[in-house]
Image (cartoon, rainbow, N blue to C red; front, side, top):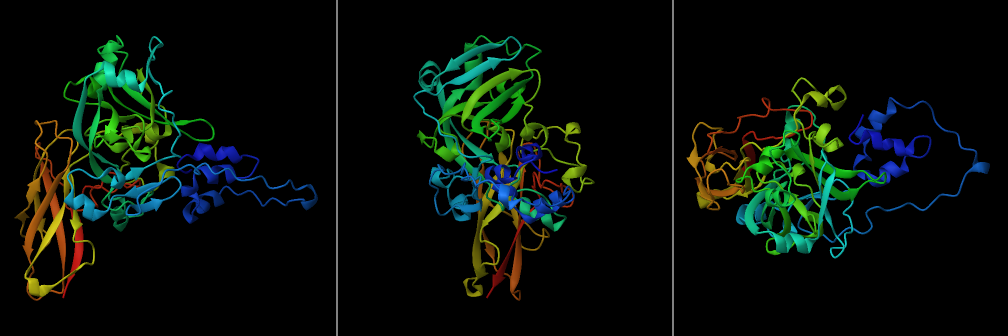
Length: 433
């Protein structure tokens, strides 16, 4: 019915308040419309038998303080984009301005007593590690990694048909210097045979929970972890500081080149399994529906594969929509980012002000990384002439990666009801005065 629909059974035979308090993001008109078809009547309350109203539990009362410059999409759970000017100017996003994607309340974790459980589900072998164990028993590495929500630029898909989910603009994406230990090293230390045919998936379980005790969970194929170039980390530092609470303190999974949903925050458990995670977010979300499926009630997620790598994409961060450019200056500068998943390097970014009839190549700024280990975005900038006789123009950008993948021209070819993986040409209209 709706995302997390089984959770609404917390209110079965009772009030719906437990559901709304935990998932206030669903407290909106379109959800009420979905519920309306299931209404069987209105409860008439006998005032003489009415129980006193219990105090509401605020599951979000201990949330961390956030930077006021973040563009907030929802408060409970908290979700926010990075400022566009920050993305355009900084290869490394300041930690306090890194975009935030939370599914539930931020958990309170005591680092001194924290233990990470690493489990082989095929033989029930379990080994625990403290933060100190991870920091002292294994080699640490620091790598630049861009994390992007698979719903980035979702709002633009509404032009082809309504899509469901947080209406992200173009900045549900950020880059940081992440420090941690290779998950591969930890699993080998545990004595696990990574070539065991019964080990096909690595499941990450977070410590963020709903009232029923269900945790956020996602998984990746074992091949990504086995690959010496895969660089899947158990990360405990971000930009040379402890990870901020919203970004997964004290420990998170970091899966470079893969959509952000798989880099599970507040990591409490790593499970080697023959099956992928059975969580809602692995089985019934973060999958691209075919374009003939117009709403989620028609979707059969069991026939779809969970998204892993991100496709090549790019976006314009400066100027922003409806900015006024002064004609007498003759020129203006456009800036933005480009990113491709799977370790692919961004080769070029092209920019046009006549819908692709003519292109100019932008200057790139990027990290120097080995081929197929390019986990971070490239920033681009370009100086463009202001055309004569026009009161407005539309800036368009597109990028190509080291596998010669490029972006589709329009959204129509990639539209899906969840609004995922929008990597069509990005367009920004500006005015000239």
